[in-house]
Length: 633
Ligand code: M6R
Image 1 (cartoon, rainbow, N blue to C red):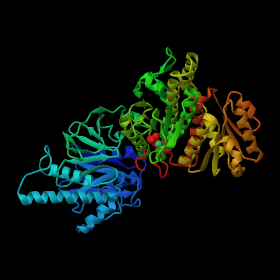
Image 2 (image 1 turned 180 degrees about the vertical axis):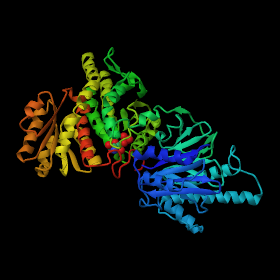
Image 3 (image 1 turned 45 degrees about the vertical axis):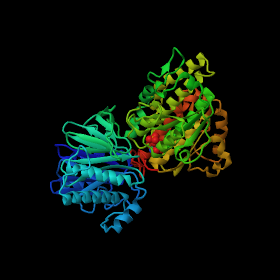
Image 4 (image 1 turned 30 degrees about the vertical axis):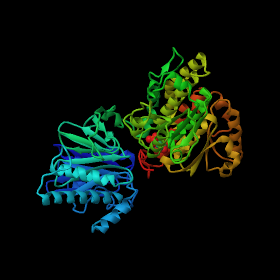
């Protein structure tokens, strides 16, 4: 989704802004641009397409100056064209603005500006309307002050035009309905940036004689690890050696300086050809980190202090709702099975986008978990806010510790998976499933689970990292399978019980990065309609570990074989022998209890999607039309 980088300091802004945009590239975008102030000029370069194109434009005629803003745009209002790329200017051409989010009432604001005689719009964007509005308010305030011959200003701390610009931003934002993360510069105000946020993340990076604004800290972590994560309705005035945070309403703001928990090295690809492959291979470590310090063999339970709940409160939970989007939702579906099996607490999974807008009947003792790798997904954040507004205890399961969901929830569990850069979620999924299993264990041990059952679950969780290593060794075998099926038009995925959500997740991975048609279903649904699709050029992938439902899966595999559909099976234990004559390709993984099985079964499927995408020449880490963090509804 859209990205923002701003810089004010003593170095040339252009390389820093371009480098920052490159680091945000993984988030998905379709145009990019910069505006750098150089004395009398605001130098702008922008274009539709990749950052490499912007880099070429900047190399042809390098913009110079030590403060500026930049942006990657993921089109919402208006096509991805050069004209619609940010930055956008006000009517005077002196104020440049970049914006993430959606100004819902932009048409009404534009109509008002048109009525007032401002018709100098050059794009179809909502952003340009905001630039015009702020510019008009600022120009009016400057003119009034000049007329009055006064030096009066609107900010207690900031003198003259700096204060006037901040006040113009505040006044404009009070008229806005919608979401925004913005950064802006004005030609007449040297070495000065203004940022603000509501619903779209914005972080201030604090350096030595230089400061930064960014929509994601990974854009600036190479320059500073000291950061202030802005809150909704914060407005920040940024200079080289100081900053001032206030609210849109004009009150002085509180802030906390945090240390970014990862380094620049953590967001490098290393020797891997793609981030996705690196992150798949990190899963032994990320699952270990998700469990680190959270399992108590002495008490045979999980210790999740971040939930901020007393034993009595945990025991009183009568219902659980798990909400999220995409991969996080699939992890939630596995969580439903685990929590119901281990703790016998009725659990429901709700798409965050549905949950937030409907009136789900809830009981007083309902505990809600919002699950999100980024912690910024607009729908999941909306669901969290709706749940909290109604007074339910709402917890987060997030990877990004500084994210809005992490900060707004009543408590929760961090994944500690490290930065996930590949657009296709991989390691966050296995961490989420491991954490939900630990939650099931904790809630189960508050109820009927015995110490020996608790111990068995802990042993199963602790054994996972080395079992994941074993599964990762199958990468070459899976690559060969991917090559064999490189000419197919699609794939079907089937699984039962804990592995039904894995079928959904595998289909999502396949769609996202290969662009092939893919569907996931419970195996038994085959005969209720899907079997009509079965044909020799459409492989069916069965997730059929050696478990209580293996023989049921076997029946479904036979049904596909009888109709000449190729079968790829992910199995374990004796499954390989039993499938030897009926599956075309068999991937055999360690045998584990059903509730941790998805953590192993999903890995060959992540690898299958990955190798097939590479074989098809797809842009694995930046698949078309997709964004890593979906901050619009
Ligand atoms: O950051 P989140 O976990 O909230 O993201 C949710 C989905 O947008 C995300 O899982 C998406 O489906 C991935 N691209 C899947 O690979």
